[in-house]
Amino acid sequence: MSTGVLIYCFNSEKILYHPVANFCINQVKQNLRLPVTVITNSITKDYLIGANNVIVIENKSGNKRVYNEELTEWFNLERSQAYDYTPYDTTILMDADYFVYTDNLLQLTNTDYDFLLHDKVHDLTNRHSYEYHDRSMIPLVWATVTIFKKNIRTKSVFDLIKHIQQHYGHYCRLFRIDFRNFRNDYAFAIAMRLLNIKNFIPTPMATLAINCQILEINKNGIKFQYKDSNGENTVGMIQQQDVHVMNKEIPFNV
Image 1 (cartoon, rainbow, N blue to C red):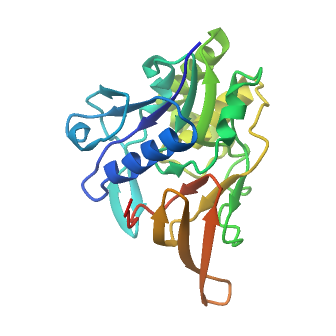
Image 2 (image 1 turned 120 degrees about the vertical axis):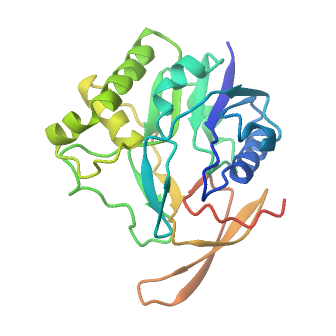
């Protein structure tokens, strides 16, 4: 039975994702020692380094998001097809900006659960940046890291996510979701609610918010800076901590 990591990487006009993806791949190889498959497009594929397998698709944006106060393309419409793309029996579906500094995810691939993701997030700056309780009638989950095994049940999950994506406006009205621009986190949350799936990764997902400046990053950890509740610049550091880094302006010197 094979186990591997699946990530997506599409450069946009204003954000180059390939340096982020290449660092992500390096971290997976170092700490998880798993093969990596990257879903990308013909424009981005030549910039990728270290992947065991590259699948080229001609993706469509179809979405926009505000990043650093500018509107940019948001390539987030392919995740619902992860079940179809993955070559592995057990897959860690991971955002390219999720960096592993431990082997903790390996333990989660060896459980009896066939579908796992985070339902809680921890802001490493303790500013509680991700409180969305009043933004919908359904609790948010985080599709940033999703572990799934290929079987009939998980296929039904992804088939339902495809359906929700096609009719996202309807489900936003149904669950009173404020985020009307398609978001995978809510599509996954709706699918899990409708299928009564209640299995979650037991620890909150550690996250550095988009307004955290990354000062230094290497294979051992990250040094970052942010403004605290008093407006003062504060410097923090993490080691031995898997982390989702929202700010894509990262000074890679690896």
